[in-house]
Image (cartoon, rainbow, N blue to C red):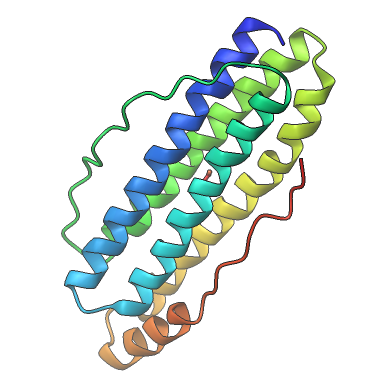
Length: 169
Ligand code: FEO
């Protein structure tokens, strides 16, 4: 594998684990606020991020590459309002989309079509993650100021269940 593509994928493993950490911190925030449904939603999000990291880890191994695990940064976003994590989540997903696009571009430049095909799943996944983040913001804008509606929204988010990624390597 091209050394730049390999290094970017290796770095992305760390970024995905950081994402998991960031979402766990959001779950942590909502737990403290007594919103267990929101906490559940973000705990599952954190699990998905770990899956993303592990898919990249496995992909590099499958291609004979060495994986180097670096320190995971401390989640450093401060949340005050119930909206804060939702907006931070959307910003973060846009950032991750840009990272995936950069890897895709690097792979395309060296005609590494196996990697672009691998990344196709992530490109689609990023579209879903950005949409999910935007939907949450919209719902909070609509219902967040009313206690009963917030209770209903919290109950809805409590219903999110985890399922393993559909991507098979
Ligand atoms: Fe792994 Fe939320 O992107």
